[in-house]
Image (cartoon, rainbow, N blue to C red; front, top):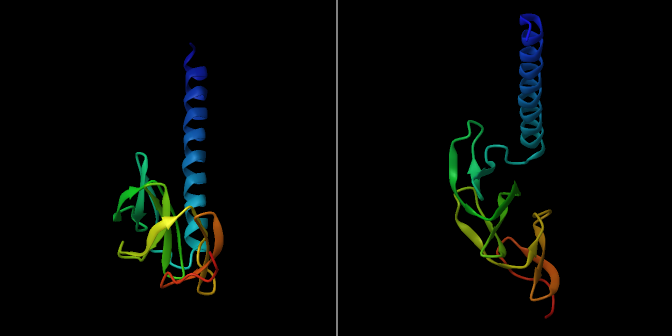
Length: 130
């Protein structure tokens, strides 16, 4: 292959790699800007999720099957096929017993428990009849 063609090929690959890295940084910055608590973000290591800081230092161990952003001081996490909520120290403040869970908003989260949907507060008190 002529040297000029090799150089062009190398430049295209480098350009593609730089574009991917730039896009990843852009997405990460958008996530950080959108969260109320930008200091901890979901971080995947292998098949498990935990939380890291802006420097990618793992703060909460990667033990969850899924994890969502922190909202109003709590993050929804999924372990053993159930959702619950942790605080920014990794303490489980609402037990992982829910089939589905949405983030907190105005002090309430929409959850599914035993096929019933309703709201819980940050203490885990439910607001619906079984």
